[in-house]
Image (cartoon, rainbow, N blue to C red; front, side):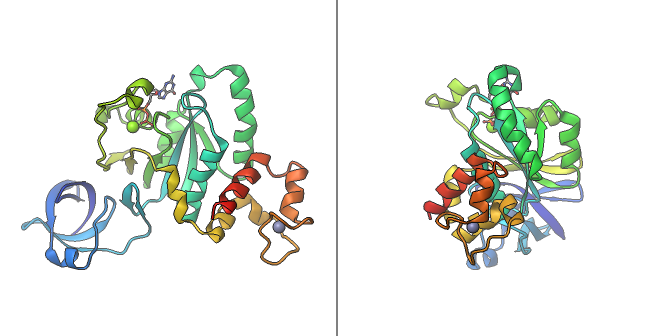
Length: 275
Ligand SMILES: Nc1nc2c(ncn2[C@@H]2O[C@H](COP(=O)(O)OP(=O)(O)O)[C@@H](O)[C@H]2O)c(=O)[nH]1
Ligand SMILES: [Mg+2]
Ligand SMILES: [Zn+2]
């Protein structure tokens, strides 16, 4: 029968099907095909023998963290502790865009940010809204719950931004471990690397130890270009323009006229120059 892998611990793959979860091993065949099963994989398995027969085609996949078939990502972004970084947010956004995963920005720690910082960051957030991204505060739980319905959602963002805290708010019985900043940075702290999937409000949710920001390395120039979604609204007179060197480039003009946020363009240039 068909099921979905919701947790992997060593060679045990927990397959969920029709409300039950079965700890399964993998058929040798799968290993021979060098298919590495991921959390989120749909599979055909034998309920009695508790073995996975085959892995079904994936919609998308990530290797760090190892997950598959993601619909959307909630990018958990703190205003302070750790501080808001437009470049980091842009990196998370383009990783999702390049993989056809819908990103939603979730803001945390408004309660401990000064008015000054909040005002400064509002300029950025207004821009992200303007170009089409949803920006939701972590106190707006009902709104967030609505977004999760019927979808598989991965929670991502910097360590300490408040991912686990937020998932706990959405489903208190999960009681996920959260870290104080000092603890998270301290030595000897055992943080689990296991990725698991939980059912939250008729959807599936994945808590992750955080996507590494370095994961943008595998994106090509083309990926980066098409992932700055608002740039696609402009037509450049130059064929294959990279929007960096051409003087009369429409994108560069839009930056000068404050139609495109300067920090977005800076992120773009930095990412283009890195590859
Ligand atoms: N003041 C405040 N603290 C928060 C908020 N969200 C998370 N925290 C705290 O930030 C720390 C890190 O949170 P955690 O959920 O472990 O972050 P994760 O690494 O992204 O999973 C914990 O001490 C939380 O209590 C928030 O909105 N406001
Ligand atoms: Mg966490
Ligand atoms: Zn251009």
